[in-house]
Image (tube, rainbow, N blue to C red; front, top):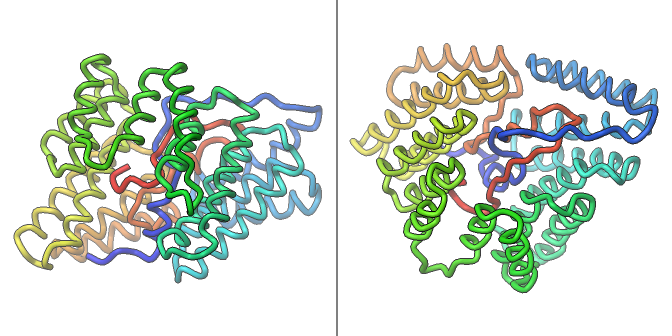
Length: 377
């Protein structure tokens, strides 16, 4: 099973991750807000129906009529990311579309600098551009990572209690080496602030700053003793088990987290991706390969059973079609692929799941956090 060209980018998805437990509607800032938001909302609704090209045309027309429509620029940036993940001809074309999205969100920020949604989204885009440079040890990595941090710092100035952005800054400053933009003192400062705001988010921050030799399973087991029945902690413990290749224990944690909070269904996609990686490392046709494919298919089926939103359903069907093809059921796999394409011609072809934050309403702030650099999110 071969990886897709955009997997490097998918690995860096940051604020675009899992279905959030809830979002806060951002209040308008002027009399023209309702009209300005109308085009963005209509375009979003079209995307939710799989009509991505129609949404793009609508927004381009709206921007031509009113270049100061910040919401339209923002939604156009999201469409360009949507299209980049769904049409990965090569890395160059993907990065070109990400660059176009960056230009669109920069316009939105310039027009409406007080809207926290825009710098938070821009930070994610900047990371998509910086991540390949970091992986290839390019000389401009520090500069590119600095843009990521600057965008998130700007969002935090607008919303000082934005826990998810603060946690991303802990990870950036705490994970990157100093010559790539890391700053241990800043990571510690934000971790301490999070501990004072939210015990679970504080525990997440401390987990990022643990030494490399630390046992993450033991760490999260300890946290769970203090926060029994907390779905977020169960998720963290489950992912720690996955990173330790203790799959049965991970599944048990994910099941419990899902029962507590059904919006944790995305964990079944994380489980599917884990099995995809196992299959990629196994010899094609071997027993371990077949087992990984079967387990991955079962995990993505569980996710589909939760009836996700259309773009996520299309992505999951695409993943399932690959599992079927690699298990010798090519005809069934091709049929599922056609279903996915019918739902959304630009459904993500990346190995990593797209962020449902790409699909929330354009006037909503995401309150979900996704780790930036961990192989199992």
